[in-house]
Length: 608
Image (cartoon, rainbow, N blue to C red; front, top):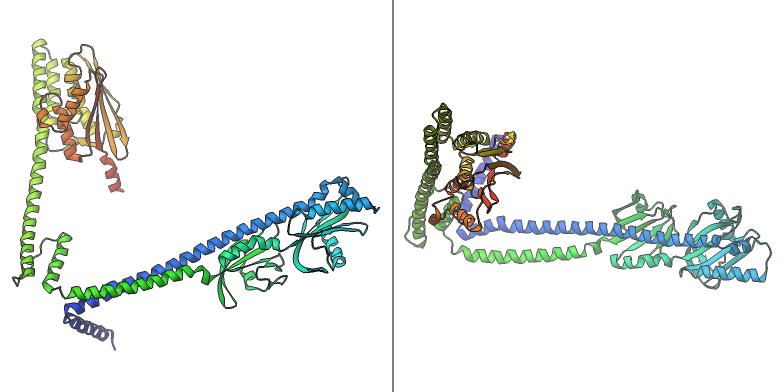
């Protein structure tokens, strides 16, 4: 069969299935859709939740097992270190060393040595016996079981060789079974050669037999928590300790756990006798012994299995209840209602070019009719609001900007008139030229935004005229760096603020006045400051000024019209979070801060 024939067959099958589905009643359709879109995702989500929860439990168990194994290894190293220190204690007893080096056997010497060895044997409760051998074939010992080793003669030669190889350093002998006349037990040994401190010549050696209950005491609490078992092997892979007591002293070199434990610390999954375990291991840097902690997988995932079963049960109950509810609701649904719902969803996405085809005058038909009326009304209102807002913003901006120009033109012309009357010279020509530049800048409405550099140039022209009028009474200090001259701002932003300072801050003052411009950057905003050293104002006047700037119509007259104008235009252009803030104290001057966004940042992002 060709590819085209196959595609045609698939298309025909899809069409038949669609026809069958389309001819089903609403209840059947709802059930099919519900099973596909609700039940299946719920089941999958439940399964995924159970799966990842189980994985999380396993990961936490591995982390816990690895950490606890390392801690137990540290405790065991501490215990062995104590034994090493005990074996070195005779080296700090000069009397004991003299007794050991003395070939004569005297009753007092034997009693003294026995007493010292007995005290050594009492330090650790798990230390079963302490043996001391001199170079003359004499043995001194203390045994808690009151019965010495049956094979003491055999192990003496082995111990002597181990002590000699150690050369005065403590040597650890792995676990072996110790048999006495009264009982038997498993013990590991610590052996150290004893030397004269004067010439470091060997004079004998000491051996400690320690019951493996010392290891069991460190491990049994962990095994009770994990419900598993613990195995400790030496550097030759012989079992030092087995919490099941089945593998004591056996060689595990061929065991799978030994082969998998390739590093100093880690974990891996393993099967032992048909059961799955998580095995965590750690190697001692002191003894080179390696501890394996086996945690049954069944115990580790018991809580996860219980959670999974509860989740599946709740999922089944939810699906059953949801199906019953869907069957009940399906009787109340109609095709026109579904159509209205679809149209409403279209409206929610922003598409208002929809209409409901009304066929009947029942409740659903009336609902559709009112839906059509509502959509038509919404379209009209949106268009009306759009046009109104556009006209309002244009009118407000033009009106606000035009408020400043008549006031300024009047003051400037009055200044030129007075100057012409007082001084009949060519200076008037220069002032008129400067005025022309000011007028051209202010009257031009084509650009709503200018740069800070243009504003400062306009301000300098304004100050030139004012200082001509008032005999250089005012000093303008500009601390704005040139790098900020390119920041976009509204037109006539600085000049009304400086004009306000000239007319009010220095109104009743004969001496010169200073106006200072500065700038700081705060995140994506830039804050300009216009500060004067004029008369300032008290708290009452400052409060009234702030009210005027906020648009209080009852206080629109008097000082602050220019400030409110600038503040309103900044808010119209950049938003309500921007504008002016006035701070002042009587006889201490006034400071006005201007906050606008640094539009250069947005332009740089767009360029990137």
